[in-house]
Image 1 (tube, rainbow, N blue to C red):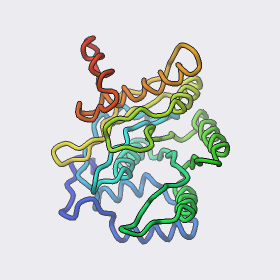
Image 2: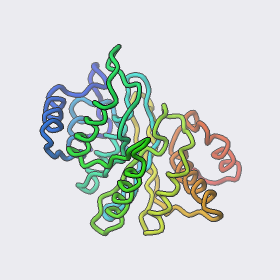
Image 3: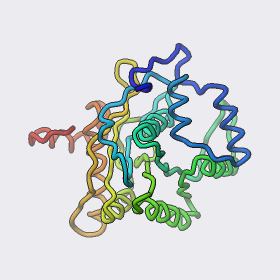
Image 4: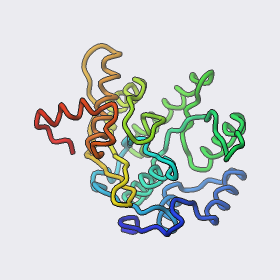
Length: 267
């Protein structure tokens, strides 16, 4: 596979200038692009060293929701891991997942220059149109955001529905954080419709950016509404954590260590 053991050049994690130009034109002109094909091409030409593990767990057909940890560090933005996951799904089934993304960023800078929120909001809308992403609006737009998520769920539960994908934490550096309970609500709603959750762990090892997939599962949780949402969220995050090195377990370290003490196989 082209992505496996692909060694990057000395320039490191940089997007090819030709891709940047084509991408910018598509975003500005509203032209649709296939995100999986683009991700695979970028990684093959100028991406970081990459390794895929457990890609046989990616369902070859039918809907699913891909969940992964928000892994990034200086010099490696989270979208590199997102591209690797997207390319893996694309290569497996010639179909890209629909990523959920926020409607805006705050305090974003290009070097010393702050980028206005209104400009980012406009850019994200154009990006979503080009790559068929699902924007989840924030702040006063939250009602619209719930409708967008509901539309994505309805698309996912149909037999021909494309997979969904999200980083449940929303922010982070790779060490696991505890996401909001709304993540559990979404996963339970999908699970009740028979849509499995596919966990993936992103990390670096021996100079490689690694995407490790685990077996899919249907989220299940008992108890009161709030408890159910929290337990479903934690079930997904523990599945992700089981695919990561211990140093990235973060807020789930104690939970994962307890599972190990019980002799449960983490991954």
